[in-house]
Image (cartoon, rainbow, N blue to C red; front, top):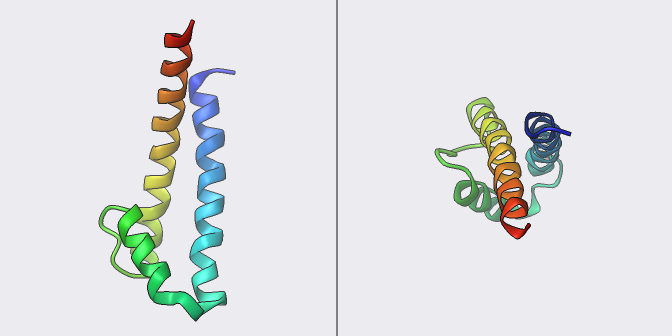
Length: 80
């Protein structure tokens, strides 16, 4: 499996997890302030639970998948 395919698969998985986490804020709003603080710390430019915040999060988790697979591949090459 090549780098692009692995990154895309991981990116789609991360988007799925982000969508669940984002929706959980509206389903179970007990710890809403903690949820918002964690999103603000984890995602650059995240301000509120709206469409713009969702798009920012989706783009960032997809990019992080590519970075993660690149670092993983690089570390595997160094270990040989």
